[in-house]
Image 1 (cartoon, rainbow, N blue to C red):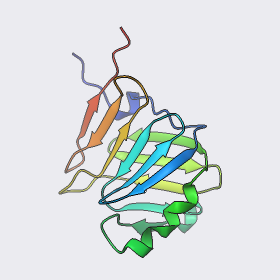
Image 2: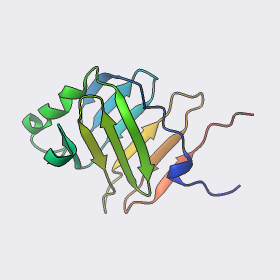
Image 3: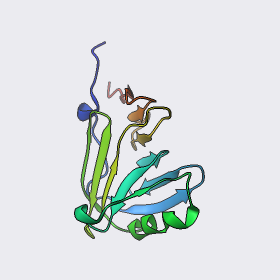
Length: 134
């Protein structure tokens, strides 16, 4: 079986709204397609690309409030490249999650059955499972 890169995994996020936001030891975004994005380590987020700040899901919980602005907002661009996930939203918000040296940093689970999955493992190597369409 040929090795697959994260760039080859279709992300079912563009045009989909964030229908739910879960906060526990990580932040999970549920999109209207049924896809989810889990953010387990610090990531950058801002109302615009130029106003980004670092948000740590395991840090001060009051600092997580800005991510709530995404509820019901549609993604306009979404791409995984290497070990980094970038998502732009219709309200101008921008999210970027990269690797962490010691922990799984982010993951994507698609709406397919079984789902396409990407997990960025400690150090930034991706673990990828693709839906078999046969």
